[in-house]
Image (cartoon, rainbow, N blue to C red; front, side, top):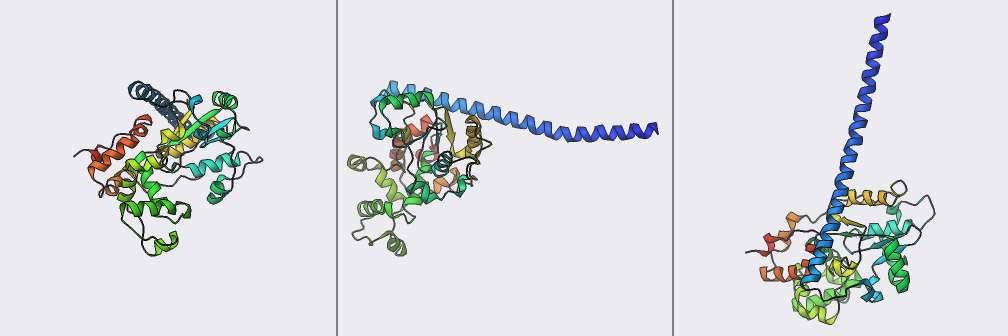
Length: 321
């Protein structure tokens, strides 16, 4: 009987070991991943600070402090006073899902699933509290005490996404831009009455027309870029405001989990599923095939500060002969 007890004990210990080993491996893997993300976050913030110092030394002619900004400069800053969070949203960088998160955080607990909030509702019906709604003294307090975050994206891929959504889509609020681009760069004298008819007739600007519009010096002389293609640094002022967290569209899933954990909300909020980006770095070249190297370089100059501040490499395959 003694030998049977020893055999049973042996297999019991072996089973326990086999059960504990995967848990231990999973725990260690999680710790390694968390440390890697923490180091990446530190790198992003350090890079931004270094680039800001360099930018100010070289050719910075803008405001030296956030206090020099007009109230309208804070229109993209959503404030959650309940949790002490400020989110600077950048169109075409997961802003729909982050707006959903900011919205549900102001609902009663348990929080509803962010994905249950309709995208049209979140953009058109919700009246968020913005930093621009407060006095300068209140802004100062919130910027110093609240957790501030933003998410960024490869600048050229963001432009492609804006073109696909606003120029190839059927958003009536952007049809004025469509008509302007077609008239100026496609020599279209007549434009259909509305965007649905234009799409039915196949009347739409090419990607090259869109780039022509952006690099034309007259465009910004008439009015500032629309936020969907305005430079990210001009929307969120990273050289004037020190962010606590800088997320990337390219690492959205991991960054979202890390941020929610930092905010102690990882058990309360499920960030919506992250779908594969339809515009990959490899496909960028095909989008720019119709754009001359000269115009590509002009475009890069316009968005160079975004590339440098947020650690995106210079796309030499597009810019060099």
